[in-house]
Image 1 (cartoon, rainbow, N blue to C red):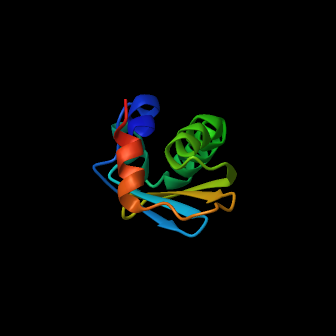
Image 2 (image 1 turned 45 degrees about the vertical axis):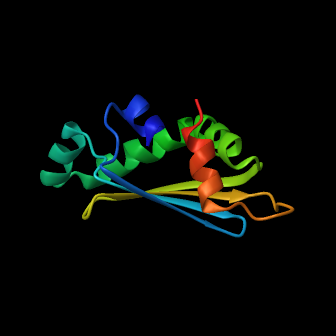
Length: 114
């Protein structure tokens, strides 16, 4: 959420993260900017998808770096997708296999560390 807010100028209003085996999925809701909402309402959702896709490609390294720091595991692959109605984005990270699973509480504590 912090990276979205920092680089898009607006962060999502809701977020939920799932860790299953070696897969980390973040679902983000309510993150479109005023410009993006205007484009979507005027029938230009494809333009928003194109810009978001290009931007996510450019942001891959910062996103991967944050996930690796929080999980303590290397990211093998990163994928991103955005849906316009409803306003939901998905950030998917495939992690290198770990020796022991991470507990959700442990991830939350790491994410909140300064």
